[in-house]
Length: 377
Ligand code: ADP
Image (cartoon, rainbow, N blue to C red; front, side, top):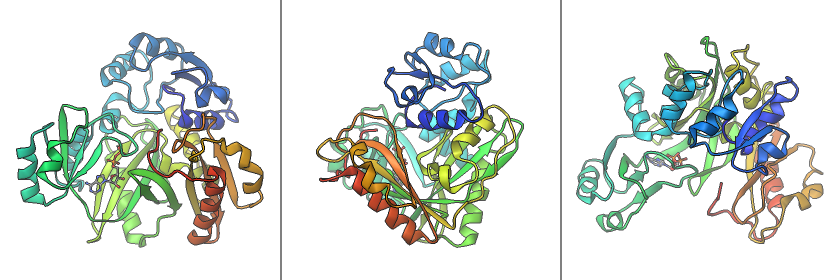
């Protein structure tokens, strides 16, 4: 696995009972997956030599992020089973490419246009057609809402600096709910789809989720059909997460894709018969996929962010663990205010109870002076 963050750490947890030996390319030997026992090679995901070295002898190569340059993914794929492959990975790497590809398949996406960064006149023309404010995105490299700006006027556009050469302009969708659909796929084509998840964002970060989503069955069915359709004729393997907007008019639009385990799937560890991490491994290795049905009527997940005082949430575990509905995951990361340090999942008879329990536990772990803004990965 290229990358050794919390997704690789939870993949390592899923690898253990299956006897899979997970080797990671880590930025440091203190990365979350390395602390969880994954075999580690320290190196850069931008170096083809490091990528080749960690891939040597592996049954398959996969990713915990989408930042490996696509040309290196293509080079690796000449000698290794790279899963997902370069074509589907490109959909997660380049938002403009994804928009164009999906629109070409007839899948609804927000109206968009790619312009030169700083081209305020082009942005004004776009706004004349689609209204203010305009959503401006860095086409690649962004995550957790970084690289996304809401621009309300030409003056705001004139001072916008996303540090990129092109801006992806998008119509601002009037969002009723944000949904995510996780599909696991094996290269031979078999797929399984998890119940649709509803994500609740704060400052562009998926901070909470409930599962299954609180939407009519017909909306869930449509969202599932869209997510599956995207996987027709791809080189995807393992988990693919499709993020969707349900707009106030009831229409579903695809926002973005991730071709790896995803924050919106963390509740599957306890809430589904097979976690997204195990199904990612099974898909990547082209093994039969596991049952995705839910093990409770409702689940909720809340991120644990570092509190303002920078203290370690682990020191507050005992008080939180007193609630039997709560499951804690800490990622072994250095505590910093606002940093995503873990998550809590709660299972319950209904969404409200699950969300209340997960919120209480996450707040308890974050401690005094809960910092909700400015997440730092
Ligand atoms: P990232 O790749 O950083 O996660 P996203 O493209 O998912 O960025 O955008 C982050 C958040 O910004 C979304 O979850 C949504 O809340 C909001 N957003 C993104 N695009 C739009 C849009 N076209 N209209 C309205 N809100 C949007």
